[in-house]
Length: 42
Image: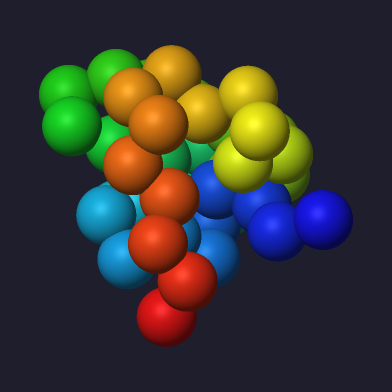
């Protein structure tokens, strides 16, 4: 299952979390749980 850190909109904040459209998300969150439904594979 793809994870948030693989999304082109994910910007890493540190080793475990990042920013996606202004929302803090864990990098290892499954993309099915994406808060903005913006996942696009690289």
